[in-house]
Amino acid sequence: MKNKIVALFLAAILVFPNVALARTYHVPIIMYHKVVDICPSTSKKDYAFYITPKLFEAEMRYLRNHGYKTIFMKDAAAAIAAGKNISGNSVVLTFDDGTSDFPETVLPVLKKYNLHATIYVNPGFNGKNDRMTWEDIMALGHSDLVEVAAHTMDHVNLTTVSLDEARSQIEDSKTVIEHLIDKPVVSFAYPFGGHNADLANMVQSLGFTSGVISEQIGEESSSTQFILPRLRIGDTNHIETFIKLLRG
Image 1 (cartoon, helix red, strand yellow):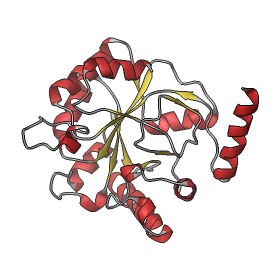
Image 2 (cartoon, helix red, strand yellow):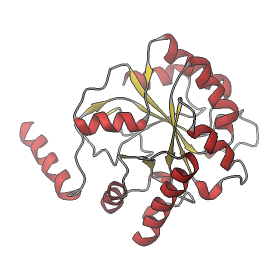
Image 3 (tube, one colour):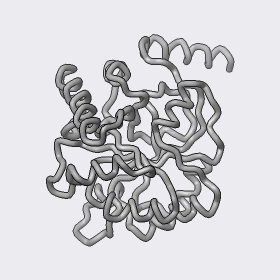
Image 4 (spheres, helix red, strand yellow):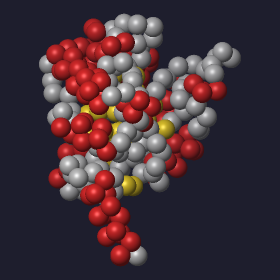
């Protein structure tokens, strides 16, 4: 067993030569998308990513009532990089895409239960369709409960474009958001979970301290901090499922 662990460690170094390996961490990173009421026209695909406001609030109430501590992704990444232990009752709440339900529905619940969340936004879509406006993002940047993070400019699957285009998508989103909120942006999420070794190294080189994917690999991982798995929540889940995910 020991030899197997050593072999895996060496393999990781070969695959990700320029990315610092994170120590095994023990904090669930929960992934949400939209918090909206499900209607008959909601597609099966969206149904797996959406969650109703009622169920979302039940989950947040559970966190508060059971003593969970919500931390920003940037703080979890800092602890992982330093090899520090993360409290066993900590959890990271993340939201992808920057849709308008976040300031309208999610933020009031976070305030009600005094919980923290990291939201990954695509500034290229600001104010379009169901996305937040520039004003929304600036306001969130001043909230003590929200970390505003990057998700590329246009929600591009980075594995399908050139490395130059990928760099532009990642770097420009960081620059634009930092200009909006006047704060460093150090957390990144790969759209569609699309990642590889080159992209992980790129994310690190551009000044980010973490990169999260969408695969539900598990709660505990020795992945690099630039390819961190998350636990997806959708309306196909129930509060019992949420509790099981938290407990691993």
